Length: 111
Image (cartoon, rainbow, N blue to C red; front, side, top):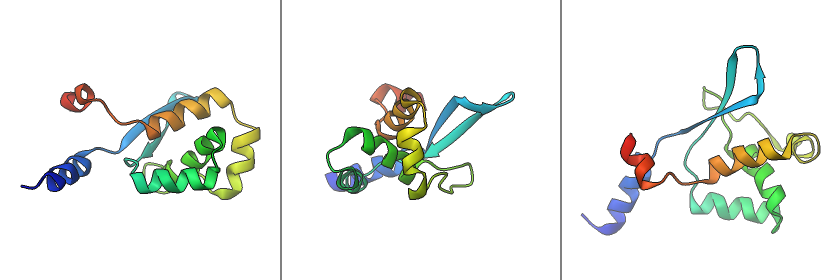
């Protein structure tokens, strides 16, 4: 097997991330969003949209990658202003960072 095939097989084996957001939850059930692994092409697209603005990059990350349990996007471009101006920056940064992060070898081995 070629190295590129091994690299692709590894990416294909990565699971959809489940990210809990207790700060946005109602009642007893913790709100969760989901995200498929981020590709280099997607990261490049997000950076282009953000125009070298790391804060905007986090908002775009949620807009384009955050999914509900049915795999549907939970935000759209019309939400950008609210995400940038009306949402707790620490929560948004944590969720965006989790979406953009790659699981460590140890985390993958646990699964």
